[in-house]
Image (cartoon, rainbow, N blue to C red; front, side):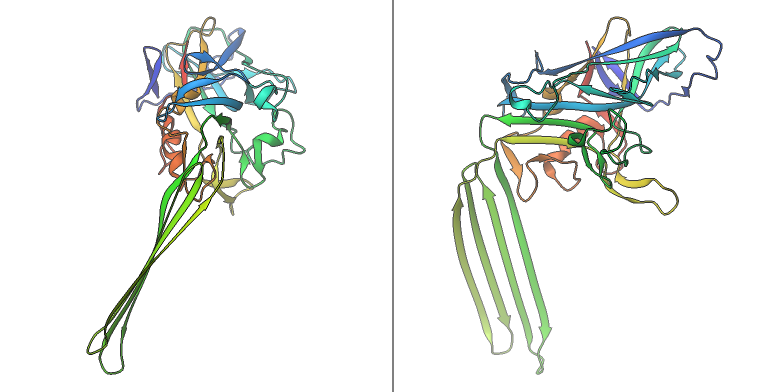
Length: 353
């Protein structure tokens, strides 16, 4: 669970029981609630075409091209710690079952891959009561995540928020245009060693090492190969080193963040997919006044530990939710998801205004 401290959520390990309408509050009168969301980048509200400065560890200047995400299983928490599910209004457009789409982009400027309509609210009903916290999941529930977006009901019919049948939906999509070219940085080392015993008892050792490094918005590649052979008992030693340097002019200014489940495959026990990395972030915001407060989704907070001018070599530019992509580590952590177990920890993307 997260505790809000100066409007910032902090995780603690306290369970909250979920009571759905129909049990403890079955006889209560229902009230309509509207949860308001806002997209920010630092101290500025998100807007397509606007420029934002000093984002990430590189203090990059960027222009956003997309910012949308799915939320599900919204609930309000009463003073006793009971989470009461918000029954979403089924509007056949922005909300379906227990899932809602939040859409800050309006299709203008750099956001030409998006839609003209925006959506910053979730509407539903809960039993009348005194609530103090809000909780929800960033993502699409497992039972809906692997449907065919081409025939799915709205808002799950956006193919721009869908990878494929096995991968499922992009729970969060944030595309960014950086002013500076994004370099590919990293070192790839391949080593091979062979040890053998000769016919006459001689020891033979062959070792080969290839090291490749890449960097630059203007892309350069340097490769060093070292080959060493050692033959014992009269054959002596041999060593050879060669260096190859090449330069490629490549420019990429688009940093994409697509968060969804990865490592998914059919389950032999059900018709649901099992995913090694579900990547559904459980968000709890304390001290939330549903009548006055706004849930702020701040991309600058999400990217506070990310270098937007650099990308791990041999990976897509940005983060596509791969656990093997170092560019994803700080983003996944700031979503409250540990890399190893996919469990909640502290998150920084959402806070209450």
